[in-house]
Image (cartoon, rainbow, N blue to C red):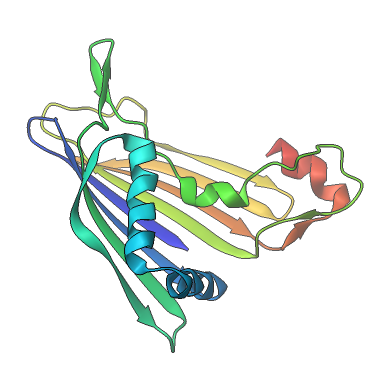
Length: 193
């Protein structure tokens, strides 16, 4: 799964144009296709918009969500386009936005019991990538220094990179899992990461 979100604030900073592209491959493509077949696509599109409403508040759908499929390659691509009306927060003389990599969260949930006597099931082996691009309006500055965070625990390998090229800030989260479970002896490393 690769999710790409592009945020472009208006010149006056009152709204943000958000474009989203999610590319599903393999078993994840099969799962999203199953969701599209089991429900009306309009309802799924409403669910997608509601997800961003929960994150960023009031929004307008600029272009209805679309889906394209390549059954031979087992790939499904979903595209969404919104205008966020309340995503920017102000405080302490600054304007800011919190950006989330929620597409990784289901694969990173902690177990209900931290004391494990058996292996912990994970979602599935593979790589998840969540990319965020944010276009800084004139006069805006990045408040966090660019850099990279790496963490490895058990079969999971996580990287977060924050970079800036002129007015474009890019935040990339990458999670790679080499297994569908964490063996019990590897749990301390997994939980520490």
